[in-house]
Image 1 (tube, helix red, strand yellow):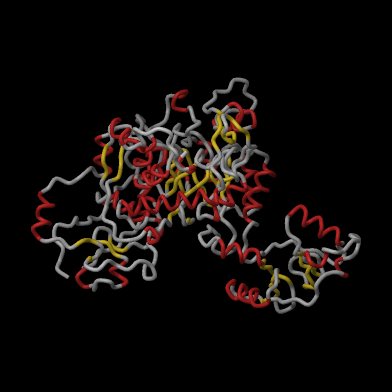
Image 2: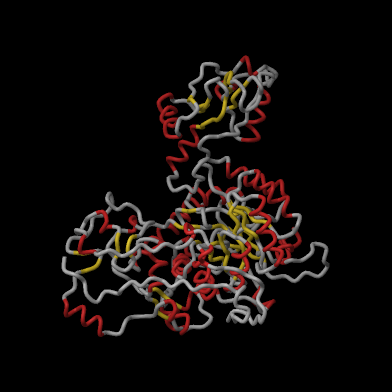
Length: 613
């Protein structure tokens, strides 16, 4: 193929050394500090695996069109590691080289002389101070792939990847176990709120982790002294009845049998010993088998529970058929690589009493802890991050909320694995009005993500998401995920009771800074003592309409995201981020008239989608 002239040349990003410790006179536009705190954020000190890696651009002429390498390569961005394998999807369109149309030299020269459309991200921010989601649009790119080819893989922390960039907000009217389960099954992750007792929050996390398992290493086990009534009680309280029986009544004991629903369905005497009803002729798998091998054995033997035993016949794990069906029905599930359990996060505060909460959550194998604070740049939060990382290094920690690069620097220095960006922009938040403190959300995301990217720290855009378009805009500004509250409230899985108002079915939705939430205990989120008589409210209570089930709503959002990325010519979130940094993503400002023009207008009695409310 002839070489392509006039195409934008990709330049490597310059990483600026940031070390406030050695430069006491440095000034930061985000704050007026004259003496910044002691920080050492030299990017060279960050492990190589956590730094963004740029693939060297190779000559496209050496790769024949249609080859596997060419199909995963873009002349602007090089190799895209997070794009899916497209070999089984839509074929390359004939006549196209490296995903771009073939243009004549005259046309390329005309494009070079013509003024470029729109702005880069940096130019847009300079042109439009106080940028918000509604202030700009992305310009369309060239489409050479189908929506099914788009990869939405992303990161929420350094080491936790998701298949969809959706995170539920830790609010007591949004995120409990049912929402967390649905979010994980659909490729995202749920963050369980902490406006409850330690035991209640730990139980919610336990429900999520036990919903879907691979190898169940801590199953409910009984001994031969147990009664049928004990198995019935487990079925009623925990929802399952496949209980292994060992000689010790514990995991690690010699397997004697198993009691399932069919063994006790017609047993009237609940005082009967399980030894008289249990199934003793069992199909078992040996220690060392893979999950795939165990699943194939379960399919062929048609059993509901498959015990895993060692050479001495001792029970070491269990596999359930229901988990096999969940894996089939939800292929995008966010699961732990080793245990195959659903990923789950939980929120905590910054009080000393929250350290006991962290311990209880870690015992339930929570994957990520989100430190919940309206203003995250505090000594209390930095101390909490350091304590968690020292005592529970396996648990990932997300700090926040932050809106400036200096706030981000403090929490990155403390050791957080991710950042939560946003202050006062939620639909039920009044922080900006009451405290006169915060920042427009689009500007916050751009500034914080640009700084945090140097250290391999993903950022979550928290607040202000009112439509599917806002999701892709947040991602285009550099966010790795979006945290949603009002978008998920009112779903069938969200906590709360239904009520009717003006003919619409609704659920209550309140901010964690509202009077109702503070009365229940959320005042600690705002660094206030629970015994203080004067409380400053930073949120309101309201209601949202019925959005249906998240099992229909989240796939809708996911398809909206894929089609939006297709429209701007990006095959993955990773490619979108690279385009924003390299200037290949073009954007346009919107005046008030342009915003009105882009909405539904000049018609009456509009019948819109349920999911666009």
